[in-house]
Length: 368
Image (cartoon, rainbow, N blue to C red):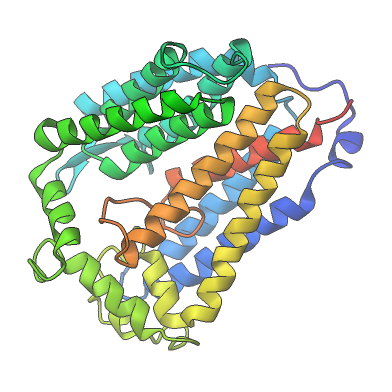
């Protein structure tokens, strides 16, 4: 992989330090919040997260040295490689709580499904760059290849089973399809296909506990101590934070371990309980700023490939935030989606940092 011809000093003069600082601010709040969420756990999860953050930021700076256009030629090898990892983990991966999602690499545990998000993003950016939509937008037949490129990894992830990550992979693909342009009649057809697909997934794709979570969402009091326990405890935590919160380390739902998965999927519930509505609003505004920045870069990029990359990252962050906050506040079913830069998990954190790094890269090279 060739480095850019520009001197690093001149290149980094264009580096969007403000966007990187914004990303670090969210991740820093995440480490601070995680230190409270994991006080009842023997392992210092926040320290592990801090090490992943440091490694991820180093990777972002190295990524900045490589022109993002080189990744265009690597899109399909990256995609095929990730598919290979997903097949490999299905056979030889480590099983935790009934899900086979992780590869053990000595002291590191890698989750290939996280890489699938980036693989789909990059390969679709290349596809739409090579096949620009006709006037009026793409028809259904012109979306068959993008759908196939999205569906294959999404199904492999769903089989692990990991419904939340499969939904994010599908959402990233759909975001890029919409960004590329779709005819209005085609959108109606896609909506009908989506309904049929959801019905098919309900009958043949979802596990029993996943169906139970959706049923509990429709009837929250139907199984409050069973499938609805996670959602109910989360809503209690969020509501008890009120306006200003109970203070760091003082959330009763968190510190008494009533809140399940409080360091991963329900990390926002910890934040809401201990810091209240005011700081929740600030956190959402930070995410919104990050998403708007990525969309601005998409509009200002020097080429279509860079534009699609930035738009895909905006969609990746948006869907993570939207689904996670929706499920912990009871507005959406619990499907197991992390909050980017806040939830514990090295693979998740690294994936989001690399995604942000791609947008930084596109902005640095939007002229010249």
